[in-house]
Length: 128
Image (cartoon, rainbow, N blue to C red; front, side, top):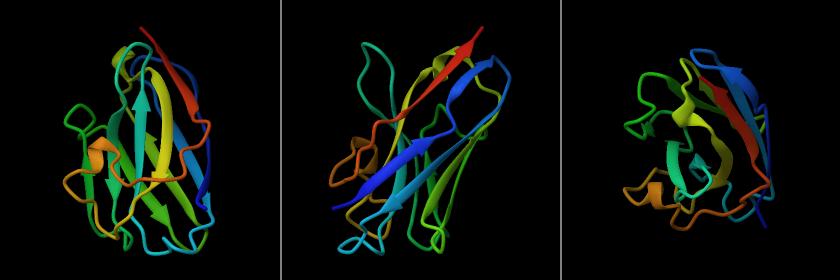
């Protein structure tokens, strides 16, 4: 069973930066999986933010964060990172990481299809 633990959230002013981290364990059946960040704001549906394939060679981002967010992973340390720059109020949400069922970020990744390991999340609040 995949388990994840997100950290690094907090309160930041608009234009500021945060770095989210996620530790992943239990990847026995998904040891070569893609990893992704998702977010959910109050009253809104969950949104796929960024995805990275197992090798770390391909990434995909939501249009709303392209050019501002960077996803990366360290397979040896089993960690996933999301560097978030130039934050604005629209980025306020609970952020989650999860493990995908494929080594690549399939076209359905934004829907969270076949992703596992949803943790407690880490809250990001951007003040304007």
